[in-house]
Amino acid sequence: MAKPCKNSLAFPDDAFAARVLRWYDLHGRHDLPWQVSCAYRRWVSEIMLQQTTVAAVIPYFMRFMERFPTIDALSEAPVADVMAHWAGLGYYARARNLHAAARVVVRTLQGVWPQTVEGLSALPGIGRSTAGAIAVFAFAARAPILDANVRRILRRYHDEQGTGAAHTRRLWALAADHLPAQRVADYTQAIMDLGALVCRKTPDCPRCPLASDCAFTGAEPAVARTARRERSVAMLLAQRADGCVFLVRRPTRGVWGGLWSLPECPLADDAAFCLRQHGLEARACVLLAPFTHTLTHCTLHIQPIHAQGVVTTSPQPGGDDMMWYPLDQPAPGVPAPVGRLLTRLREIP
Ligand code: SF4
Image (cartoon, rainbow, N blue to C red):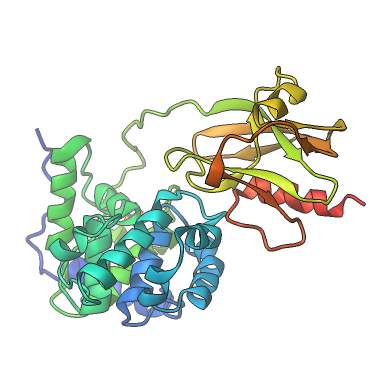
């Protein structure tokens, strides 16, 4: 049973929005590189911003736009090139969906963007909230959004506790009720900014324009936390005499899906045995300094092993999913810790 909202929405329609907009005019972000009315830039930025901060996204967005300045350029590019420009940003299914959606718009829809939330939601990787944001920013639609920031504000402001589909429906209804009659795009950016800058995990209520009637008491609903897993793995830097390093493509599903990576084996296994499974043999194997890499739900303890003077001893299984990468060439799309290891290898005299 839904708890009644402690804040009635009966007071003037724009009271909430007006305060958020006034705060935004003074403190919001007005010069982000995607704040233009271009569906393509808005779409790419909204996908990159899913589960990723503005600060982390900006350099990736700039590089991505330089390489793929238009949706036509993106749709014509090989998916491996798109993955390479996404490497390090995480959640790689986003990049594959972005590429797939570009092809739908260019090839199936003849370059005509859907302009409604329903039409945009039909494209790969675009959920209702992202579709709302693109429709608002690029096509001046009037639609609510409910990303993690907005969800947190509404949950706290209205003391809207609970979980599940009914809870989410109530939050969507509140998000729609708060939409102002005018300046919808500014309001949408404003409430995103308020969540990112003020109503954060630890809220800064004294700076918040909603503090006077916010229902937040400091108590958050208990969120079931999954314990962070720990995993240890050996990564093999198998290098030929000509300097090339052996890379394998990861399966499209799962962590680092579709990126190029190093062969991995459990720490207990012997490196020579792992190399043989790829049809390789090394003159010598040297342990490099181990390090830790943090993923969303897992801490990865990595033991790099430098296999030197590697030669091919039997036909290599893998076909297109393996390559010998020349270290002096730009790296293909690789996960951050693999990029770090390749850099380390380049520094070995
Ligand atoms: S007053 Fe505090 S809890 Fe309420 S919306 Fe503002 S920052 Fe969030």
